[in-house]
Length: 139
Image 1: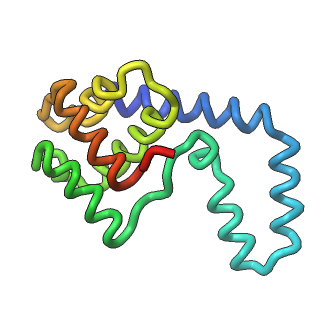
Image 2 (image 1 turned 45 degrees about the vertical axis):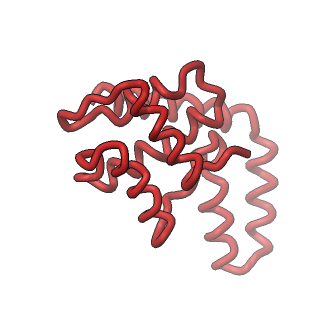
């Protein structure tokens, strides 16, 4: 629960910071979507959210989702009992990986230690390896 609260707080702070610093970009995005068709405007709005601004990948679907869950399951099968929770943790971990976290292996171990499962930094390293192969490749 503490991890979820901390993650939500960090994402909220980053979202407010990004939105507060880029008001011109937001108005440009609105101007661009007003000239597009309704479906294009919807897609532009979906892709311009705070999650994308902080480096969070979109929620995977289909084969990509299956690959992410398989990478997590390889570390510990109990982590995917709640698939949505595992996917959320994976998306948040991508932010840590791409944001230059000081110790991303420890971050992954903490982020994925839930529902009675406690991971080591070595487990976190394996999760990060799997995420780099699937959801958040190194840019």
